Length: 354
Image 1 (cartoon, one colour):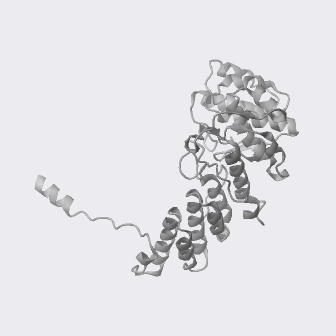
Image 2: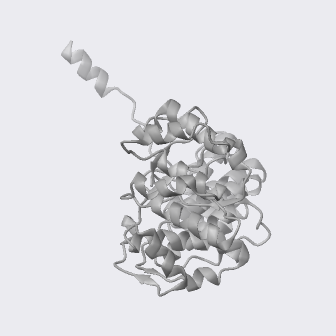
Image 3: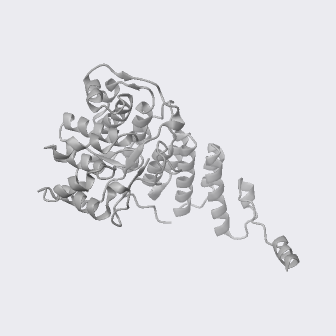
């Protein structure tokens, strides 16, 4: 029996090595297989930061959906490898997959102190797509988080369409440098910049919470956060600053539920929504009592958060209703690299048809 098993193992087929160069695809007998091989080579060469061969490979794919798919695959891989400029060049050629390519590139580019390409130029003509919004958020994240300096001057000077992302990224670093003290961080917006020890790029991590799928809340104005999250925009600059600081506190892994407790009764609805979204997912001894007392709240969005939290005891780390998202630590491959686990695209973004 042992001999038979050894013979069986010896005769097991060996999987062929994946193609790595265009010449590897010439032996494919069918045109369809050659196309698939070429797309794989393009992605592989892009992963190795070989823009020229990746671009050449995609140009050799017949025009149509597969050539667009090739540019999509190569563009996102090149961006994740740190060459965002050439990655976005390929994304521009991705046709129906262009928005997804921009989005994947945005969340895939690694945290870095090096300036990113001019995202306004890269997104020319596509300023209304989610992918360009995410590029903007990524640019500001790299500009502030982990750098050891939270100077509000740059955020205040941001173009109007970038101000939400700029303020949100500034708040992440301000809260970190203030060691979670929101009053200290808030004072730095109009005061002296906060400074402190920078983080190496591979430690620019945090905790993020994907947005809960509550229709009334989804209809409110927001901007991309980090790791695929969304951040509500305030109705005034002062309110938006408070929301950004609460999101910064939620991103900070050492923040506890008590930080958000005072804001659960805030008269500004969007501040309350942000606070309860964080509070309901953090452990605290009286979470159930606090949430139970909020069941009679006149605001339907608050009641929706409360009902889901009580049903699934989200402060204990239990999952939420199907279709709703769960608070999770913020860098798996494919999305927000400043996180511990992240999806391949922002919440609510369907994968392109294959």
